[in-house]
Image 1 (cartoon, one colour):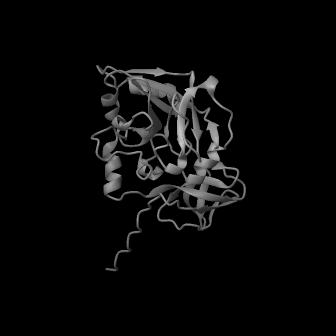
Image 2: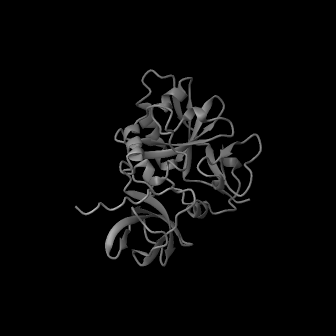
Image 3: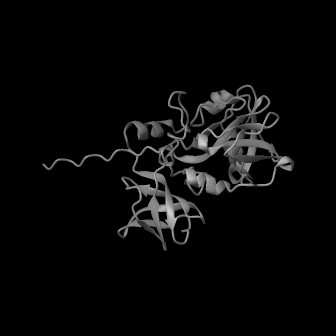
Length: 277
């Protein structure tokens, strides 16, 4: 079974009797659904509905454990702390803990905080355990998640620019449409129910040298998007303007990109052209 420690991840403990109510008004998903063996993927947005960070919540002992990008952990603690007011909540970095991912097999047995990756069954599982208990890697997580088309924070998403539905949060169970208000909810709901999506983060096959993140993507010389993360084995994600054609050849630096639409992804139907007046 392939496993991979994720050294670019960190863990924050969120404790206190008001922890669920506190988070419900801030993040995109229903944190009340977190339970032993059940994780929740969610995002923090600006008041205008743009992505700031995404993370996984798992159940600890009388606390929630947030699995987040390590570089964002200090700013997340500060940002979330501003909203505590009188809430009985504590936010504590847990630097002794790390994150492990595995796939093509069952999660570790009892004694380890672990849960299925809530985005896709094929994604596998994630676990939180002490760094000094972390096993050696036997799999390539970047290749695994790009083969599935899963985003992984920056550079796949841009702070204060990305809309959640552009990055697949609807299909990948990162948004609750029933839990009530949270910061940035209005734009997220409007994007869904009014069909306002104009761009989409899409898996691409890369033919040629792997482009750097941010490299423009061109169709017949016109810019239609930009490269995001990629893997040397010809896998990547690109933000592309809709509509698009699976398998079409797009230029990106010295490479050719071909969109590949996974089974889980739902793209909007092209709108019919207006009848001539």
